[in-house]
Image: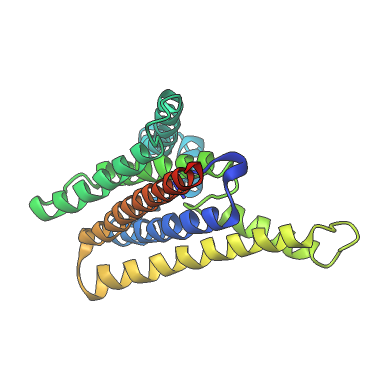
Length: 247
């Protein structure tokens, strides 16, 4: 799911990566909000607050929202930069790099929360937004902009459009494709909510606080190992089949 691109990428690959990353995004979203009362998976609200402060000539106050927006933007840029820089190396799975960085950020924040009293929460919010920028750029590039996992506004818009298209089969005859994209969007939305519910339960009820982010990091690491093992097994099976045919 982290390797296939272009024509070799199927709905199954997109469903796998969408469920994992949207679940992690749900965890990050609710953890950031419960900890610091700020959204940490998208910048729509931050942009509105930034414009409001600028309109009221409170430029210094609005700076923090600009930093939030820039953190998400820089995460997206950095993820894409890494992928573009190393994509010519066929031996490397370039999509692993942004995912590992995201894991390190989530783990570091959890460790930091245990080690010291965080007096500058804006730094943590920026770090989480950077991580979500990394993730959103990664999944956008790997799925050719089919999958988005860190915010739901566009998903609900697309879902509404595609549901309406089912009522007009004459204008939209490719119903199977429409149903596939609807399925994908429903999976993303459901797993985003599920991640948020579980994240909220762990944060508040189990009192894990920022340690809740460790669950997200663990899921990403397990996914990478699973994907690598599965890829190795498929390659070994192909080599064995080719040798058998050659004999």
